[in-house]
Amino acid sequence: MIPGKELKKGYAMDTPQAPAAPAGLDPAALRAFIDDTWDREIVPALCDYIAVPAKSPAFDADWAAHGHIDRVVKDAVRWARKRPIRGLSVEVIRLPGRTPVLWFDAPATRRDDGGTVLMYGHLDKQPEFSGWRAGLGPWTPVLRDGKLYGRGGADDGYAVYASLTAIEALDRQGVPRPRCVGLIETCEESGSYDLLPYVDALRDRLDRVALVVCLDSGAGNYEQLWMTTSLRGLVTGTLEVQVLDEGVHSGDSSGVVPSSFRILRHLLDRLEDSGTGRVLPSSFHCDIPAERAGQARAAARILGDEVWKRFPWSCGAEGGVVLPMATDPCEALLNRTWRPALSVTGADGLPPLASAGNVLRPRTAFKLSLRLPPLVDAGAAADELKRLLEQDAPYRARVLFQPDPGVAGGWNAPESAPWLIDALDAASRQYFDAPCGYIGQGGTIPLMNLLRQGFPAAQFMVCGVLGPKSNAHGPNEFLHVPYARRLTAAVAQAMAALPAGTQSDE
Image (cartoon, rainbow, N blue to C red):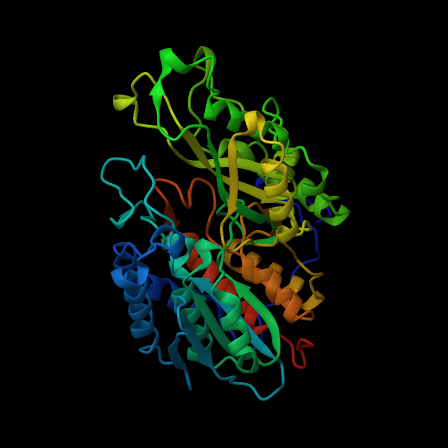
């Protein structure tokens, strides 16, 4: 974004005054219908959804037997089939041994060959995690001060409901729109390893994708529409170090038998500078495109210190708040979007504190999560990570790094067409009274890179409701309902703006 005329709250106007809404569209009526549908139908449906522990297969190996994923899919299908959308078809597609996919198809209501709008979301969830505040819980829906708490509502069970409501809102006004199809998966939180076979199976039905609308991303604040410009890749896996067949008395063995924890710590030093958090191998880094660096600077001007203050910091030394790795807002944004970062997300071989006796443990295992810049090949990174951690094991200990299935590549958005830039800015100004913002996200949506490769001429509207403190994957996750309503309206208006003759080349 190019800084220009200053608007309220520090927003910068980077484009001329946005054009009016598409012909025939009444924004006020659209917004009123969407607000009412959210309050009367979507919020109750999401309360039912949150109550179901539909954990992704990576966190529930017996997902098929438990039936929770099937339950939330059936509930969404039942809701979808009640929508008065002309010609709408809804079905559940199942490939042998894979998680199901919800598919819907709403035929075009205009005559021109504008191509297909593909709408994406997912219904599987992350696991419970600890630390929920009193009265809240992962499977306990609570609506408080416009925020719907519970696991999965924002990430992103709302997507299928918002997508169909956006379509219905246009049809109620008789606004001509393109064909809209929905692909709602149930393996995203496991890396979408089930999704590629479905995309291959549905390729003919997808036809010519002109616009991808993904509602699984984030927002820099709740005061304007935010478009995601990039997503990081991800490699996860388990690093295990074993030195003994069984635990032994620490007084008898320490100083003779090396600690499996110390060996594991030494191995991680190959990957990360523990003093700074910088990931060391150059192969896990990439050059940051000038356009993305400029957008990060513009987003930093809008968000300021909220880039890092948004997180629930604890008190550190001398009672002060723990400091972030970078206090400069632009550097913080680039750190979380265009630079690799390592997190240890789980551990095994460590007894609870209450039962931790004086025993030198036989093994230690860590679950590693390595976020990768958008332009780094995730498959090659997984191979390099395994080689780096396993080679030349200290003390000839048994070391094994086992990558999880579903290694996910990052995504860098293609250049947006002028019509889409204008449509997004118009929608943001219409429903938020502020220009559209552009920001990279540190998370991963595996399908986006796959779709860019399969439909190279498609445009992308990647957005979502995961704004400040929404805390997806962690405790106290919430969906900001007022923002979700406005986002739904913005999606409807942007779809209606798709020009005639827009299509992708397969």
